Length: 313
Image 1 (tube, rainbow, N blue to C red):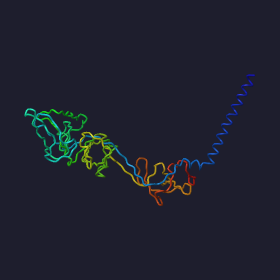
Image 2 (image 1 turned 30 degrees about the horizontal axis):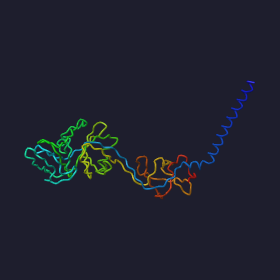
Image 3 (image 1 turned 90 degrees about the vertical axis):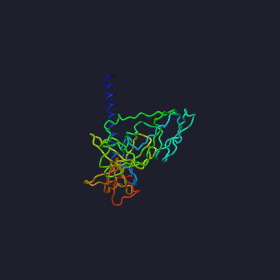
Image 4 (image 1 turned 180 degrees about the vertical axis):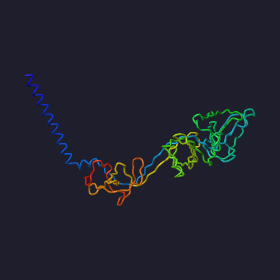
């Protein structure tokens, strides 16, 4: 009885294996017969169009700017007349100090120069000036920290009150950047580079760069910047290091024939290989040009299973 049951189990296993084998064979036959259709399903047909891609790197550094600190001429109660961030001319009324010792008489504080008034100070105003770039050792910039001045209503004579930032003098940012992220010839080649601070556009120009191992220690002049940036000492910029525009296709769409690059165009639902001329590559995209190529033409972006004449939808 036991032997009969074992023989039956072997027979059932054999039938199961035969069914599996038959299923695999049928699937393979269907795949071979319908290869063109299957290939077309995974081809991912797209339209050629003019596109633009950019490469960026982050630049974080210390801002050098022309700042004039104004101190309290007397001891007393401080009241600001001009709001933080206001652009003022020379001799504008910026604050008022009430002097109790003189029977509550008040003294006006005027701006000694034109610029943007800034109520917060960090003690680095007379140090981090563009005129001091060649005098400072910035190899340990992490140690260069100011002490924010806590402003109260009661001020003492000689105490810093506010500063006026020269918004006409171009500020300079000092930053250390990995060489791999910022080829030095990029700045030399393009002059001004596009950048952004908190999604606001500006431009930078390399003034000087020093080699520090695998990094550049660079000074960059800022232009076309938003004035609100001047209120900060440490800033982070997003710099555009590369730009590519044209008829862009994924790098994987390029198929070589006898070392000639090309892409599969879709012509009457059939794949037709067409030679192209790559005109640049960035972020996995390739700009292509070629006879007859134009916006709106359909091409295969995933040609892994595609052959000449494959059916694609």
